[in-house]
Length: 175
Image (tube, rainbow, N blue to C red; front, side, top):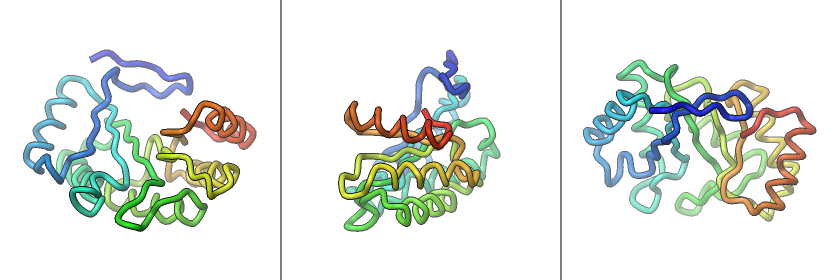
């Protein structure tokens, strides 16, 4: 599998593995087999979220299963791990207020059985929270070492430009 070097220097495989259904419609055994095959082919970029797949379970399944996998295979250091925050989970967790981001990153770290997340995304724009507050919370996650890079997902182009400018001003590494 080819590797790409992102502008910030992060080296990722050219194919990312999405773990949305791991632990719900994809059994632990099947997910472990997929992960083994993906890593065996040189893949290193795994994407999940703190709410996957809440519509089929609690929303904890994907991160929890990945944590079990990293622990059993002792391979966390070989993976570029991305997870997200901000979408609803059965009426909890929606939003990107500072307190929410601080709470959910700790929950993700616990479930993923890791000390850091390589790429921590705001999963969707939260129009009820000032963009500066959200970006500041992501910056805090990075500067505390809980995340290496901040990221944005499901933002419109103009909001993404404003968010990137805020992160640059804070000198927060982002993708």
